[in-house]
Amino acid sequence: MTSIESLTLEVADTAAANRFYTAFGLGTQVRLRASEAPTTGFRGFALSLTVSQPATVNGFIGAALDVGATSLKPAAKSFWGYGGVVQAPDGTIWKIATSAKRDTGPATQQFDEIVLLLGAVDVAASKRFYVDRGLVVVKSFGRKYVEFATVSSPVKLALYGRRGLAKDVGVPVDGTGSHRVVLGGDAGSFTDPDGFVWEAASLTTTP
Image (cartoon, rainbow, N blue to C red; front, side):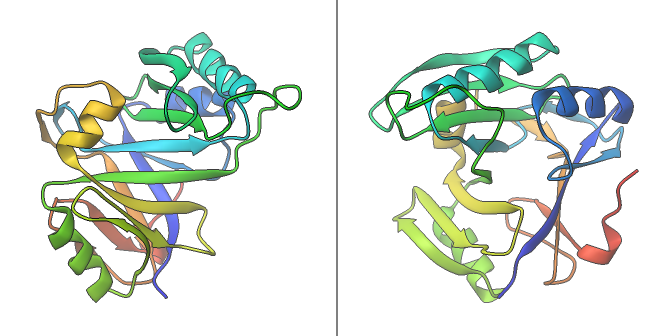
C-alpha cells in the first residue's frame, strides 16, 4: 500500500520556520526546505491537527498566535465539534479541531493525527489518480471529500474540493504559483492533477 513517509514544507526562512513549529508543538512530523519559488494567495492545501478536546484546540491556537501566526478563523463550536484556523508565518494554513464539544480533562500539547488536505479541482479525477497509484480509499463523500488509508504514515492524506477547502479555512480560493509542499513516499516521483509534487522518499531530506 502506498504511504506518505514524509511531508516537506518549502519556506523562505528555514530557521524562522523551525522556531515557529518547535514552539507550536511539532517536531519531526513536518520537514522544512528552503525555497524562493513564487506563490500568491491560497496554495491549495491545508494541514489539520486533530486533537482530543476544545481546551487542547485553544492551547495549540494560542501557542501559534504567540509565535507569530495569524488567525483566519477563531476557535468556535460547529456541527462537527470545535476548531479554529491559523496561518503560520511561512504561509501554511493550519486547522486545529476536535470532534468533542466539551472538555474531559486539562489541556495538553498533544495531537492525535495530522491530516494533509489537498484542494482538488475535480475530486473524482484526483481520487482515480491516487487509487491508480496504490492508495486505498477509506472514506468518500462523492465529489466533496476523500480520505485514504495511510496506516503507517506520520500524515494522513485527504482530498477536498478546492473551493470547499478555501471556504472551510476562511480564505479566498484564488492563488497562483508554487504549492510550497512536497510529499515523500514509496510510490516514486510524480505530480498529481492539481500540481502537488511527490518525491521518492529517499530524495526528501531535512536541512
